[in-house]
Length: 251
Length: 264
Image (cartoon, rainbow over all chains, first blue to last red; front, top):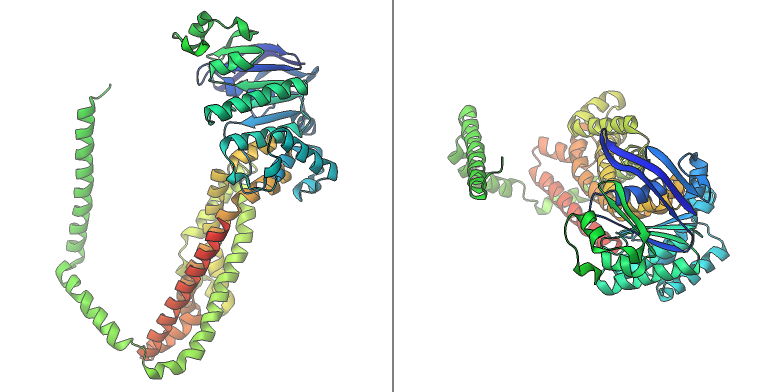
């Protein structure tokens, strides 16, 4: 269970980026955060694993507050929270399997991690995860040789090997063609059910959000204006969110 | 206030014309102030090249100098390579401490930037002259002069490479719970390696050229024998030396371009 309570953040004085954001997410739920650019979607997502330090509030993962964690505790929190990026953020020069294994670093001693010493089980798990995302034949390819959709699936495998409770996806399909985007969304949806994950994705594609998400959170100017099951998302809500009529997206 | 686009573009055209006119004006003023005759300067160029061609042309006789030139040249190339490699080692650690994405804190970053720009902005000639007092005429003086300047350049270059190329992967690994050193060794260093090697190769090429100049000042290597030949009016031998330098620099460039093609 992920509970966010009264989250506040401002980058400049008197210009709040987030005001009083609160929401709960149960395991096995795929959540889409929607809203205009600059509304604060990325700030919320990055506060959840404290890549951005927010100013006030609570972020409880199964009852423990990640915001008050010290450095060692924060590492332990972070390894339970996978992250998938718009630009994939892989080490392009390394092979696919090396990038997947990076997801294990949070569990390793500094020295073992520095030298990249992984156990046999970790390597086998990496291979089985690659199979799950449909890249078992690409394990030894350099990531720079992959297509965008393939890179994103490597990113997903990297987050899965963390054995996460939560996966955060920052615009996971914004750089992908429609076919790859659909594959990635379906994969995320399936994994959420299979591993009973909390999967939170920032999305600009409202039709995708409506189609795949169980729960939708709408953010406008740093405030939460919608937090319901996705079939309750209406044209009225979208008009409030984006300040204009957005109808065709709901088709 | 919004300007109209036509007005904006017309303004921009005027600005460009004005900038070009000002640069031209500075040139004319400079020539006048220095009493520099442009026409004579231009006419002198072919004459100078003709003189060079006649006097610096290596003859059959200059071939006898070749073994000595060769030996000094090897010495100079090795000096350039060793100073660059040592400089690169120092620079990578300092750059990691000083870059915005991997750096310790704002204070250390400012210090690192200051050090880099200090080493970089003292001209090589000045470094050689200063170090000459402390270390006398020796290869080590040349090595140190090249090292200090290369360190300055490489710190700056490496910091920019880290900031441009490593920040995204760094963020991803930080998010997995990886520790600082794990992130550096597993993400930052592998990611920036090709660009770093490319800079090291460039610096070696550059240092071979500069080592010649440093050699004239510190009395070592290929620069020293060029100086001797030149001052004793053995122009054909001096020409031979220059030719040898050109060949070696071109060879080095070709080799490093090949290496780049493989690693990038």
